[in-house]
Image 1: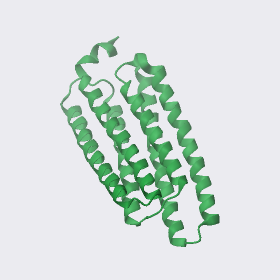
Image 2: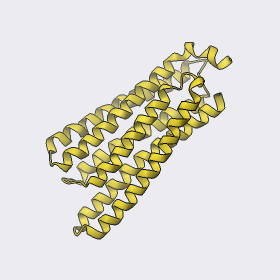
Image 3: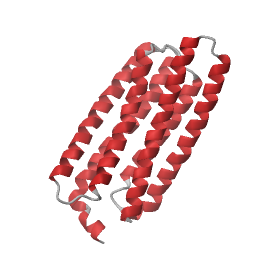
Length: 214
């Protein structure tokens, strides 16, 4: 009962979480678009997607700072302060890694990517969308069962991404003759898969919050 009574006054936190989750999904979509652009050698479009990712990451950073500032000034928080820190920090990590993928592609001057990279990016985007789905429901613990379904979906997708990455690596080592290209793509596959790991970390944090508060 206590929990429900405090919610309306601290709605701001949920607005911040939702705004951040939106940037995560936008980043995930831009990453898929970036890889699609590279598959068809549309390099100008790829550059635009990378710039978009930077913008979403910057916006998310602002939201993170605002959330941390709110923690210092609020007397009442919707749930434990450490949990709020962990949640917003974990969400920030997702976008940081999304940005890392885009920056690494630029840094390694990757001109051509594989369908497997797109497959992992697609799975990463689905994870991001489930993070958003879970975050949007956090304002009420009546949503606990649905929130946990989103978290379980993220766990499954992370396992799928792991499997796709291993298959992609195996294919790469069998078929890629150019050692430099092999090293570059191996790094990109690993970074892409790590985006899903960071989503899983957030899912674990959210599961903890739900179990503590429902």
